[in-house]
Length: 172
Image (cartoon, rainbow, N blue to C red; front, side, top):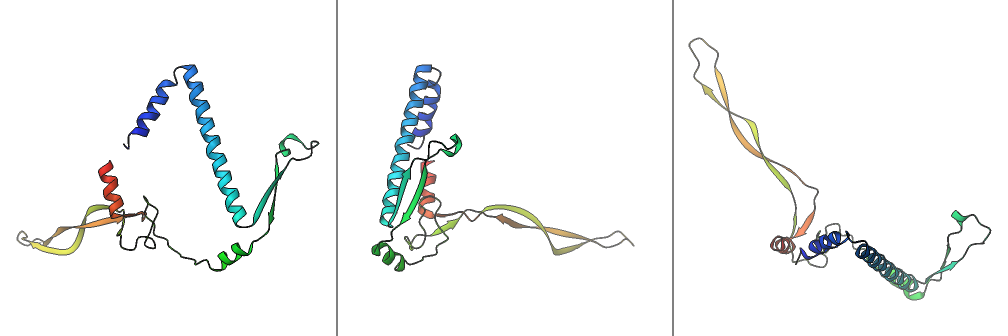
């Protein structure tokens, strides 16, 4: 299932050798981008209306230079009593730890264990554990340092739920 997108993208790239098919692929991608953009704009307008903010577009004067003749926007704020009450009752939940897969943390899933990805490398550590070696007659005493191993670790502190990690491991 996870490889369907990769295979489909590979197929589309292979089909780009035909000019007619390549044109159709580009047209569909542009159309899809346009649909996504309009959905995002509608969603944005809905949120702004809920907050009591209206956005009005108006065309600029024809005498302006071409680089300045882009559409200008004017924001007008008419706060509704509902949005003000909502802001006053908003609880600021500061939550820094979020799973990198499901984007939820302890607030929504308090029973799930959050783990941190960490790179760990075993290294030899020369500690003060020394043992005397037999020396030749009249020579200096030699000590041998027994090697000890420790762990060196580094992390970007990317956290993930254990279940999300298990699911991702099974899918890979």
